[in-house]
Amino acid sequence: MKTLLSILGLIGVGLLGRLAPHPPNTTPVTAIAFAAGKYVGPLWAVAIPLIVMLAADLVIGFYDWKVLVSVYASVAMIGGVSIFARRMKPAIVLLLVMASSILFFLVTNFAVWAASTWYPSTLEGLIASYVAGLPFLRNMFIGDLFYAASLLGAFEWAFAMLQKWQARNASLAEPVST
Image (cartoon, rainbow, N blue to C red; front, side):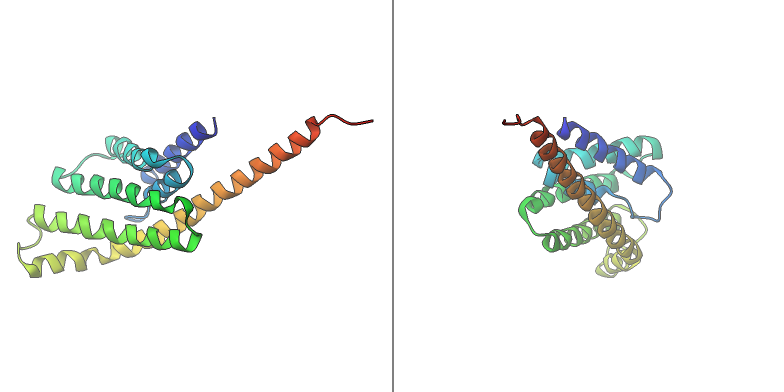
């Protein structure tokens, strides 16, 4: 039951975060991948963020398929990276979150350069694509760090409260000796 609630909660947070008004690239998708990787399991670390992306894109709308594929592939790769966070200290997890932001930035901006006519097919065009994407990278860092700290902190708090509640109820169920 705890796993199902975690999965549904992560999907709900992800959809809310993608569908509610927000600054560009400040969504909880990366944080959801990390929470799923840490608390639900490796398969869900990839599946939940992709489910969120697909469901939200059905509402928001789709765009150039070549860029879309790079976005979904980046999200899947982030899910794969998040699996390593399962037993790591929080500071290392936050470094992995930041690395995930950079991974997304590098892959998706390369795809925009390669698939669109916005930039010339030259090294200068690629550099221009990355430079133009820097504000989005900044937003992604801010969003990913905020959501990851909030979501992972909320899970830790919820599981600690659940353990306390279970321990308290177990002690109440113990027979009283006379």
